[in-house]
Image (spheres, rainbow, N blue to C red):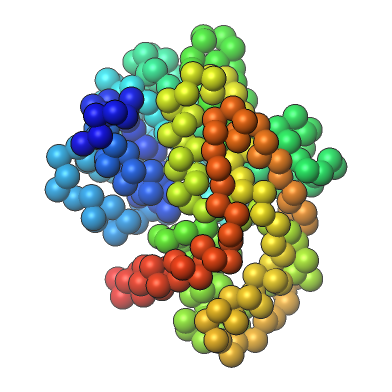
Length: 325
């Protein structure tokens, strides 16, 4: 146990804990000595993401829906910090926009009400760069107009607004982190996952790499471990209270470049095919992370290709394990 960590011995709740990002956060928090409770309804998360934590005395997993007040009440009671990572995924919004709003908006409100009722010290909220919509100012900083162009962006902005209201009305210590194109081991590789893991899975299975549109869409890929550090800093640094941060590497890579480089890395002979553009897909991300670097001291991994190459073995192992289940 790391006695130097301000989170050691504290009860922390990670919603979406069995998901890609949530499981990495649970892993680090248990190592810091926090009393970690993962909450997930397993509609998107997977028990396999948390298997390596089973048996640790300072970790437990709870199956619950964040929209279910009765189920969440005993989970939140006594908590010091909530890391709210549970969400209806971006691709789900086109299938069921009502669920999208119910989870991303209503679920967040439910957690905030419980956090206030039980005097939770800190609420760290995971949001998304999709709240900006198509950028009109580059690089995009936190003061950029919020004009989402997808159901997902609208529902995540609703969650942000609830968080901000609880900070302003009740003085709740909250921080909003806007995530951008996170990649790393345990990332979902089905149609609801990230493009890096989807491309990798298709390469392993000898399938074409599908690009929606021309492929010149730019993305700001962010290493999952950097995102974990951003969450921990937000939870422990007093200057983060009431603040919003772009949690992004600032790296700019096109989807077409990603496909071509991953083929080369894996020495793969699979075709790249172009399909119709996705509704609400944003073309360009050029994200400023100056605020989070200045205020919270986060240094983001800049070597995207090197990190991807070094972690391919872990990526592949996780994907093959997922296929076997």
